[in-house]
Length: 130
Image (cartoon, rainbow, N blue to C red; front, side, top):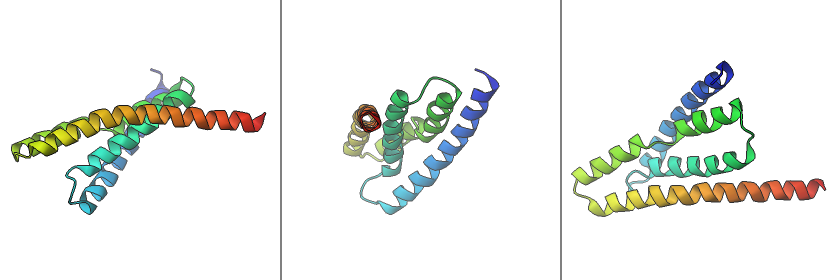
């Protein structure tokens, strides 16, 4: 990886991590009915954006900075795993299953949805330009 890509990944990762904490804690504080909704939300937003970026961006340093840095910093497996462990230790097994299914299946669906939406938007833009 060249210096430009390295800098973009580094900066993007910092911004993504900051957004994850800021958005995640705000959502968690505002929703007492769904434990860990902040982590779920940032993972779904990140997956949707990763799907869109994967089909709209050309390979190169900027794509690495956006997907590997910004969106990699935004999404989080470690926080998700900690949430599952904490919830299991509390004996809240229904929430463990709900969280696991929501993150895994929801994330995969969000990536596909991001790709589909991005392709539709690109098609509309190309049609409008013709």
